[in-house]
Image (tube, rainbow, N blue to C red):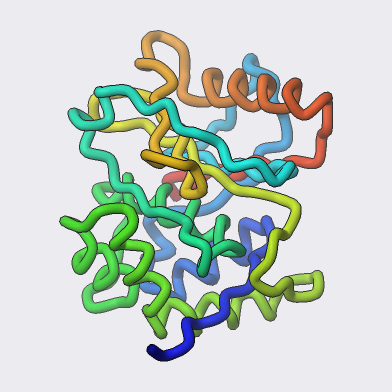
Amino acid sequence: MSKSLSWHALESDPDLWRVYMEKLGADGNSFEFIEIYSLDEDYPPEENIYAFIFLYPDNGSTPISNVSSQDVHDNLWTIKQIDELDSCCCLIALLHAIGNNLDNIVLKADSPLAMFFEKTKNMTADERAVVLLNDQKIHQAHEETAEQGQTAMVDSERVGYHYIAYIVSKNNNLYALNGSTRGPQAKFIRELDKESFYSYVTREIKQRIHELNGDIRFNLIGLARK
């Protein structure tokens, strides 16, 4: 068996992510990444947000998903963060964000992302992870992006931080998608009603910060309509 590709961790940088996703074939005219500077529910971002990606300190424990039966009805796109992809939580979160917004994000024909999502559309989360692990075009773009970061590249090991994505399903249900969970990667949070996607996500993040004893080493970036 050939040795699997080595993947390095990515920085939390919206400009870097945009270049990365464009390199993989996402049309830059259909999306942008925006940094969210406030968790004040009364001041939501003006942009139309498709997904949020949340970076927070990782204490090393592996969470257990409490997915509900609504996941089946919502037909979410999920991917597992297998051991060989242990430093790829940023990429996993990006794929969760885009993979559940393929009606909104334009992918160029025959691009690495378009081919990846087409190839894996009927696969399980674990099967998608194996395809990703061996996708040389995505890997090359990933490593080129990691090299452009402001900090030293981190090898495949626990990097001290973790990324998850928040998305809204076609049935207007809010989920947290976490590739590293034991069990299903989708955690059903609630059905959205009159309150905004942003309000519920900031509430979830405030609770996460409370669980981290007030640790504010986090970052929140939105995948938005351009």
